[in-house]
Image (tube, rainbow, N blue to C red; front, side):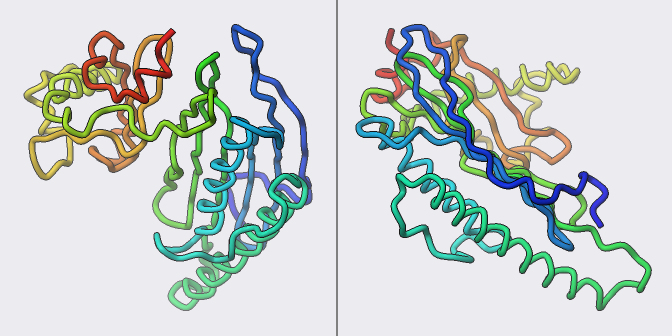
Amino acid sequence: MMKTRKKLIGLGLAVAAVVACTPSGKELKTETFEFADSTAHAHLTIKAELPVAAKGAPAAIRTKLIEVMDRQLSHIGTYEQDRMFPAFEGNADDSKALMDYYRGKAFETIATVSQADFDERKQYIDEDEEIPGWEYDFSLTRTSETDRYVIFLSEDIVFSGGAHGGIIGCGPLTFDKKDGHLVEKFLKDSALQEMQPLLRKGLVQYYASNGQEIQPEQLGEYLTLSGDVIPYPVWAPIPTPEGLDFTYQQYEIASYADGMPSFTLPYEEVLPFLTEDAKEIIRK
């Protein structure tokens, strides 16, 4: 029995249409789906917010978000290239059928992999020793929206019986509201070397916010990099009113104890290094 969460049974699928507030009133209409249930050795929650089925930009955004949901939920308990079940092949505009499929398959998957894990561990421990269960919290929700772009966050919290859980997912996904395409690159690949002073400045600010006053030249003592070059985060940075926000995942450049290093760089500092796609969506 899991100690880290109350056991929730049969909450079912809740659907609610919501509208985000943007300055111009051109809001992206969405619907949110929520599900939570437990098996003998696992707990699963799903919260997915998708644009209401439509044409144009909302349809393009919805299609991409469904791809993200498919990728994450079909890989529960697997290695990178494996799938536990095929993608939904029905009418993607039918929200009920779509979500019934993914919640059913995801629940079946986590039940299977957690049971197999339990059976294997049981062979090597004392009969009365407790075996921790699995937890998988899938989240795909809108976090901010302006006239020009909308951001969704793909962030899954996973615990599979180890020393601690982890955060996975595709991270923040910024969509251009003009045509619905995903802005995949904010920074030019060729600008990485020129960005080094700014990345170091941001990381120093992050450690300072946690009470560790260090100098840029001391970062090597804190980071777990094989060389001197600080990479761009795997998760794409996101636009905010204050500037471009960067977040590194657990273990990406630092130890687990250092959390997820994050910082914001003002637009006037990063503007020369932005891609044309990024410049377009932050242009007022």
